[in-house]
Image (tube, rainbow, N blue to C red; front, side):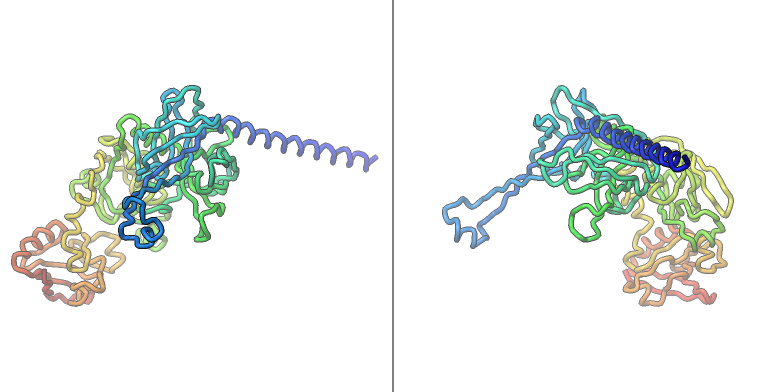
Length: 458
C-alpha cells in the first residue's frame, strides 16, 4: 500500500511538472506570436564611388571601362514598429546613418521605402517612417521595473533576410551597463544572454508580457569574431521613449546639463570622505556659470540622488540629468563633509559644444603640463594639506615643462608673479596677462613647507 501511494504521488508530481513546462512553453510562444508582426527587417544601400584611375590592375583587366566606378553595398538590421497609425519605426542609428536608401520588410513580405525622421548618435537611436496600412505596433513596457534574472525574448534578423524574425530567449543578466561603446555616449544598457547577432541591431527585447523593454544594440565578442557570446546589450525602453518623442516632435534631441566633472566613488575615496556607501558620483570640478555652480554644488560633494532617482555611479547621473527637460527645477541629494544635504538646481539646455563652456577652466594648463583645482576636503586628505585657501596641482604630464622644472602633483600654487591666487579664475586671469611677457612666473609651496618661484615659458 505504501509503495502504491508513493507511486501515485510520483506520477502526480510528473504530471504537475509537465503542466508547468507546457504553460511556460506556451507563454514564450504567445509572446513571439504577438511581437513578430511588429518587428521589421531593415535593408540599407550605400553607393561607394571609387576612382580606378590610380589602380593599374583595374585598367589591365578592364581597359575599356569608364574611369569612375560605383559599387553598391548592402547592410542588414532590424526595427520595431511603435506607431502603426503614423508608420513610425524605432531602430539603431548605426543601422541607417549615412545610408543612401533604406527599405523596410514586414513579416508579410511587403517592402516599403523608409525615410529618416530623426537620428541620435549619442544613444544610437533612430526613428524611421513608412507609408503603409495594416501595420502592427508593439506596446512599450517600463524598463525601470525589470529585474536581473527575468526571462526576456529577442526578435530580429540576424545575418540574413532569410533569417528574419528569429526568436531567441534568455534572462536579464545585468542592468545599468555603461562604457560599452564609448565614453561620449549616453549608456544605461540592459545586458542579456539572449542570442543577439549582427543584423539583430535595432530589434526588440521583450518581457514575458510581450512588451518592448529594450532595443537590441550591441554585443561583446571577447575578440573572438562577430558572433554571439552570450553578452548582448539593449537600450532601455524608457530611455528610448524619451529620445523617440524628441526625434518625432522636433527632429532632434534636447538634453540638460549640470556642469560638473565626476568620477567613481571608490573604496579608498569613500573611506577618506567617511562615507559608508560606495554608490554615488563624486564631484571633482564645477564649471563656472553652470547650473551646478549657481545651485551651490561644490567640489568634493557626492551626489546620491537626483530628483528622487538613486545615483549608483557617474554614468547614471549623466543619463538622469540629460533626460530631464531643460529649465526644470531639480532636487539633488548630496553628502558634503559627512552630512546629507538637499540642493535645488535649475537645469539648462546642454550647449552645442559643452567643451567650449569648460575650456576656460583648463586654459593653458595643458601647455605647461599640469592641472589645478581649488583645495577641498578630498584633496586635503589625499595630499595631506594644511592650507585651506589654496590651489593644488592635481595632475602632471611627465613630459611637460612644469614637471621638467620641478613642479609636482600635490604642490600648492601661491602666486602668479607678485599676485596672490586662491582660485582657478584668478590664476587664469593673471596667466593671460603674463602671456605678453612670454613667461609665467609662479610661486610654488612644496609638501615640506618650502616655497620657490618657477618660470614657465609660453
